[in-house]
Length: 150
Image (cartoon, rainbow, N blue to C red; front, side):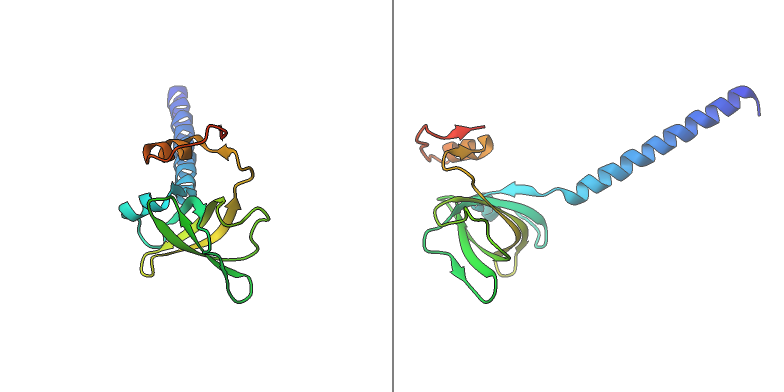
């Protein structure tokens, strides 16, 4: 092999290694993505059962039912639609009816129930993510103006 051929072989091997690393990283990110939905979006979209998603909205008043052990069933609503959620585990201290919540888990298309494995409660009564505020405004919900939109 000439010097030029060796240099081309090293460059080709390096490019192949970098390409393999990029493909592995893209595959790993593709497996861990969880899309965010509100109940109205979930009702309109064709989410396959078992797909990992995040569900956000308000805990409907009077919907929290504590079952056996640490199983809790509640309903998440966005004023247009509602979806029952089942969660087994310890709920956050700030979890209560009428408060914002984000649940991460899988949608069971057969029973139309969202099975959550993580529940996050809204930390402040005035905080609201910008995309959620925009969606609520688009749906005609009036915001009081006190919300901290970030």
